[in-house]
Image (tube, rainbow, N blue to C red):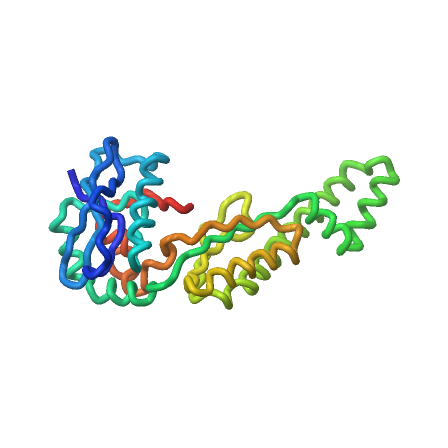
Length: 262
């Protein structure tokens, strides 16, 4: 059947609710595997595991419950191991690395910030800032729209200017928020976002961080920001040493199937 791993905690971590359910249909009961100073939050793994909404939420809820009682190293959704003995073996073999990372992440939370452009607003800014684009826009309008070649030229100029503005705005966002975080991790690029950044924030400074996000949003109304957090620190689990070993922390336990926080 296999063992599903939600996260790693200290053995002295506050007890979890005994009736806490995890993934699966029906939901598998969550249990704790202890090894020395460490423990793993686990349940039996379903025979077939897919990133369904119900299971993604269950994974997140288990980690939220654990995080309320102390620091936790969250595993990505889909982290499984052949059996309980393999899990405790990994805890024993990598105890120093896990304990150091728990110490580093204690009292922190992850905030993910994604940014995109309000298309109409950014186009107005570009036309206002670029004399060449503004002049060609006016000339085309006065010529009844301009020739096909002129339209293509204007479109290419605008596209290049938007791309340049995306890079500038992404860097401005990083510069504004990075000083309020202990670490920053850039997420995978995807269509629709000019920036996808995760910030490791001291929980005591969370309000200050969110205030800075609101201030940045006010100063840059052409940007649309989506903030997700506080989250378990998914983006900050692996140290350089663990990444150089058998993959990252989650991969040490076996297969993985993506992250629930995107």
